[in-house]
Length: 109
Image (cartoon, rainbow, N blue to C red; front, side, top):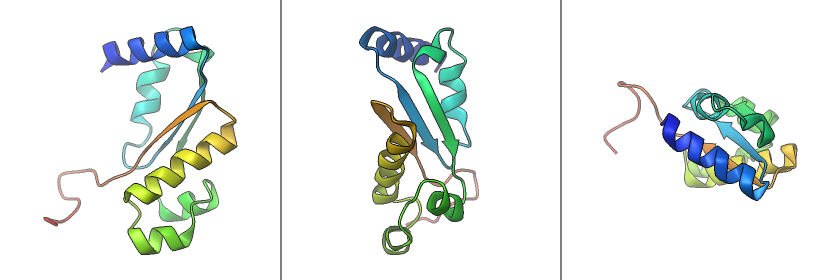
């Protein structure tokens, strides 16, 4: 993972791209891996952990309607998280992660 993070940071520096990340189930792990790379401060602008629906709504301004209609771990919510963290951070690029983590999480469906 660290090797990939180094490649990403190097490429972002070369292209002068700033990045922001919104994470849910990973609890900041992606941000941690990126910021562990020397030089990442040149490209890493913001990392938010929005674990609860309330934080997705209050901090990232994800619509309650989208969460109700599609679910908190849906593609639609993930997309809204990425778009809104870009707005908040005023970066060129963003990423978001949501899902169900843990050995007892989720359903067979």
